[in-house]
Every structure is written in C-alpha cells, then in structure tokens.
Image (cartoon, rainbow, N blue to C red; front, top):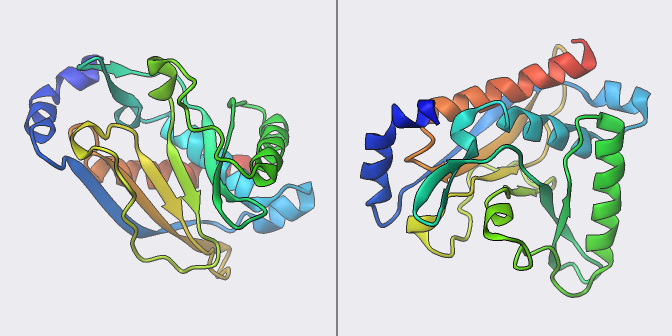
Length: 213
C-alpha cells in the first residue's frame, strides 16, 4: 500500500465526486497472436483474456479496492466475463485464475459452457464474501463490433471501485500486428490515463512473451 499512499490525496479528491470514474477507449496494438493460437489449438478469445488478466495483476493501480470505507489492495482477481446464453441473454462466466495457460483455457471453457446453458443469471457475486466481491473485474467482449466507445452500467458511481474492461472485433493483420478496440473504466482515484496506457503495454508484452514474437 506504500504506492497508494503517494496518491491518497488524489483518491480523496476524486472519491468526493458524484462520478469519480475515468473511461477511455482506444485502439490497442498487439502482435497478431491468432496464428500461434491456431498452431496450439487454443481459442484466441481465451488466450487474450488470459493475457489481459495477467497484465492487470501486474499494475497496482488496478488492484486497489474500497472495503468498509478503507482502501485495500487485493492479491488476485477472479477470471470472469459475459457470455450469451441459449436465449441470447447476458450471463456471467466465472472461474479461478491459473497461471498455466492450458489449465486457464480449460477452466474458461467449462465456465463458458455453464453460463451458456443457464437460463437464470448466475455468478452475480451475491453469494460471496465482501472481500471476494472486491476481487472481481467486469469484462465483456463484443466481437461483432469495431467498438469506438462504451459506457458500463454502474450501480452507484461514487462507490464504483471495480474496473470494467471491454474489447471489440479484432482487426486484420498487418506486418504481424493487429489492433483491438479496447476500453477501460476505473475509479480515477486509483487509475489515471497513464495507468491505462501501462495496461495496454502490459497486454501486448504478455502476448509477445507467450508467443515468442
């Protein structure tokens, strides 16, 4: 929490706002990892999710939360994201993170199948402890759209401490690179535009490490 103390005064200012959220959308440039996924027989969405979640855990600012009125730093996040069920209604997939990519993808596919099969809304977090509820990220993907902006629903802006991430349709490859429409919403008391830039860099770096590009 030493790093947080260096920005506590910024947190206190933004936390007094009715809406303390920062929301940025941008074209994230990353290595085209899809040929590598095809060779490894791994689905690109789940590989990208793996890299995003690993990257976010490398940046303190995305790990701060508010619990019982106090700022804490969580140690890890749940892997979760939205899916469409058989009725084309929103549902939530959730599973425990794994540093092993193969195990991560296997868990993700099982969670996806469970959420797709459920007609009722599952994995809302209501059954979890207050601390585990803080370990969430809100993740959604809209692969049909070249997304340019998004505004996420917020229950109460002033206490919205959980980051929301979204991405859209992958671009065609050019010179071994691709772009992803990417959006980050977070509490400005914790996260500045610079930290969102760092997250984009960390995602690209994690993909390079994984694929050897």
